[in-house]
Length: 490
Figure 1 (cartoon, rainbow, N blue to C red):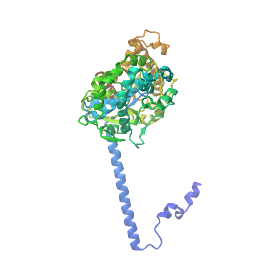
Figure 2 (tube, rainbow, N blue to C red):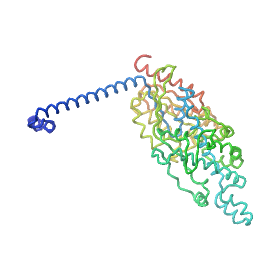
Figure 3 (cartoon, rainbow, N blue to C red):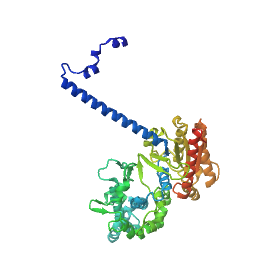
């Protein structure tokens, strides 16, 4: 076959035939053709030069970059850790987004209010019993209660808070955008009979409410910062404007605090797992401050603010001092839900270090995607996959055993650790429980890592700025030492 191809005449080559000058070409046509070919060749050479310059510039930039990957299951604290890097770079990193974060914190508060109202809603049977056994005058006086399914002393509060819950819809609409395909709204869960009955009565406060989810690359902060007019409702994140939603929070602050401090509410919430205090974006203990006139978020508020994202968030940080002075950190925050973990692999290439976040407080919780899977067990399995990955065998790994503050509070409240981790035999106290979990992750690492790389383990609460930023500084030094040692300079 190859001999046959070698013996084929030049005229049989289809490319040669296509580029062959036409027969009986005139001198003028030949000159024009050659001129066009020369111009095309020059254009091609210019493109090649531009590609070469871009490649060299990229190589020079990569030589001064350190790529850091944040990994962990959903709600493990990855985005908060990214915020800590931004704050460490510049204390004023979020100044331009303060109003956007204020709107986001209002949404976080209203998500908690919805959860509270749902927790104290009465079942249909109780409501029906009250309606059947009450006199007509009594039914009239309790009509709003019967319609809203709340205890009498909370029904009036719920009515007064309805404008706030409407503002929640307006803010979410603006955050979501009317036609933006980058916004994902989780599918509604199947309604219970109580929810269906309540919805049919016209009480939208009891509808199943799904948290808005945005893509990491979506400029959600710009959406919330600018004014918007949605279905006749105008919002404007400016305290000098009457359309600022903060004005309504100021008017409702006493009712919000009364709802949160109500004994029936606290009793109902105490039965819920996970606790509302464990939920990301919890601000109910700070209502007097958050709902005050002129409120602007602090750095700690921004760290605690919650927005659910999917996709990959990339951020560039350059420090002016420290062992990595002059270097640029490229930090990738990748989604941790099971459906997003398949997207991690492309980011393993050329990464210098990984911070793996394993929340250790949800030992009594299961995954939202799989109610059969314990969250700590899922973190251990995910950690095992990272440790044994051959592509990452030379990559520095830092393990953050995160949410230690919530673990301490949970154990102090009496939740028994050994009930969920049956291999644990020690006391229900913070220090031995934390050491037990640390040893579990260390054992997985040693069993699945063949290289001699070091493992750095830190017990963290990444919403704690002072402690976490000290840890991040240590991590920067550790990663730089590893990088220098790899080329024989340390």
